[in-house]
Image 1 (cartoon, rainbow, N blue to C red):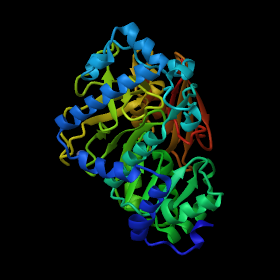
Image 2: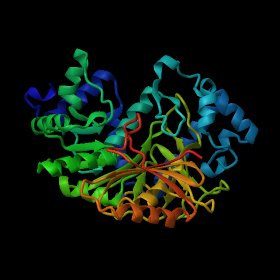
Image 3: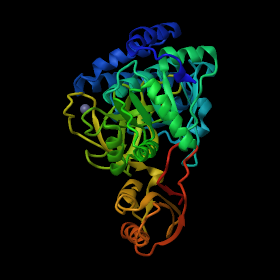
Image 4: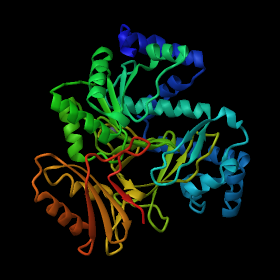
Length: 452
Ligand SMILES: [Zn+2]
């Protein structure tokens, strides 16, 4: 459908149609992008000062216009006018998912009408689905930050996009179709139904549209890469952005071999948008300090030292419609005190250790990150194509495994041995041989799920 029309030259899209469309919609997206392109080179100190200034403004706004924060700040004895940095909020309780679910009306700012805010519903993969909102300028700023980090992948504004995504939108109205041809130009592979016909259709669209950026959940891009490799088809984007914390090293290597460009790993969530992204150095993820202040907290609620794994807590500085102050995302990660060789002042995080709900509990009660379990099992033994481990009971693991046709029968014993080595010798397993691991409704794959 979309690719049948003559491809608009990238430079026209970048220089003419995209800016005109922003003017038409009254958007601050490109102006914000220009600011962000400059600020990324500011010193750490400058960026931190600017973030502190925005934090103070956000706290004042939240207390003045949101009943929830008025209560919370009063109970914690914090005067928003006295907030100089995030450390001054140490006594403010974290904003949990339960808080958001139970206090939605009180959280929203009275400066906005709800119908003017953009709603989003977060995926329910951890059993908790949330309704969140963002004001229009906040959405444009978020989009600008995404564009800035898209460019770190090697993609240039105006080049078309390809997304490997679940339930993609299709333009239906005339305005949306026009917008597609003049501005967005994105092709999709729907990850909810990847079969031969869908892959062939995607390859055909790719050859007509020639995307610059390939974008999607890491494991879905890997599945596409495998399908292309089997067909001997070479598709060459200028950049790849993987938006999943579970970017496994072996899968990253396959993706990079097949597409011939490095993978840019990115981390974010629906509630506060982009949190961190690798730059062209691929040496940890730059935190988006222009828009967010990220804290890493240990189990006692104290800030982690560099290199120490902790809970990720985000304060968004640009969503005035629904202030998110000290929001506990539900993921764990490792902060860094390194400077990136690229020279950007934006701070780094070393890695994401996983979603809290992806940690499995060993028989001695310790918690083990799902990503390390997968890296020491799935990727160690030949013949295992996909693996999912679900912990429903403390000593019982359900292991769903997809084998290659020519897998060695010894593999399973090795796999279970490795799992016992990591999680405890007393563990019992129920092993299911399955043809495929299903995705979550969001299109994401989860390799480990803890339901304890
Ligand atoms: Zn960098």
